Amino acid sequence: MSVFISGASSGIGEACARVFAAAHHDLVLVARREDRLQKLARELHDQFGIRATPIALDVRDRAKLEVLAQTHAEVFQTVDVLINNAGLAKGRDVIQKGRPEDWDVVIDTNLKGLLYVTRAFLPLMIQKRRGHIVNIGSVAGQWVYQNGNVYCASKFGVRALTESLRYDLHGSGIRVTEISPGMVKTEFSQVRFGGDQEKADAIYAGRTPLTPLDIAESVLWCVQRPARVNIQELVIFPTEQPGVHPTAPVVR
Image (cartoon, rainbow, N blue to C red; front, side, top):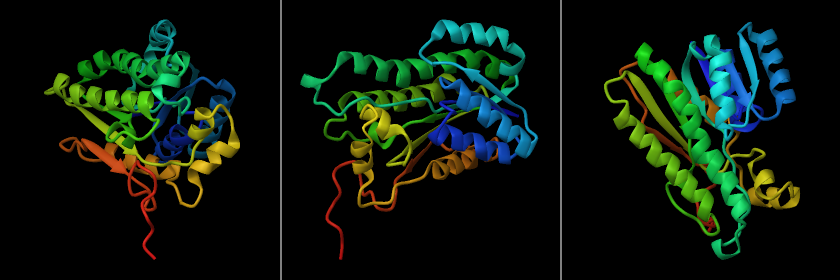
């Protein structure tokens, strides 16, 4: 079984690559940063003896994805698990002060990119009558929070697409799962705040966030269930995050 992971160069995607390699699954690793992918692929091959194929790709680039599906057809055909992990947020402005160019990046990555990648694999999975699609959503796709607007909308969209996929694929033998993490310590906040490390660190101040490994292990557990079992959805919060809104009063 081979596993395709988007956004594999860091954070949850990289952690997924590590846990699936440790479970002796071959990998197709996709992200924009080719140098990181190459290094990770070599490391996992040397450590676990698995086949790791790094592919530099921005999931927003539908034309390039279609070309890759043809030029790497033999690799794509081996994929039984698709982990749609690529996603981001840009800014924390109210809508009336938001930057439309940031909105485009968020929607094009979180929604359209997920659709492009999924569309590339579904005919192959349907033909084989097996497969598992895991979409990395967010608690922001369950509940909105102040200044979350477009990011929340994109993750609500991921949730809707995941539920729709279950109906579209009913009877195909393909499983569909959404993992919705709360606060996870990754590069997510750095990207959101344009590389401002101080703002990024402030998000985690005074609490212990989840780690990428926490989420990756949950993904692996879902995939390893028997074929008759589909984990529809997992919502995973850190113990110290009671919800998506500002921290509630702490019990002393």
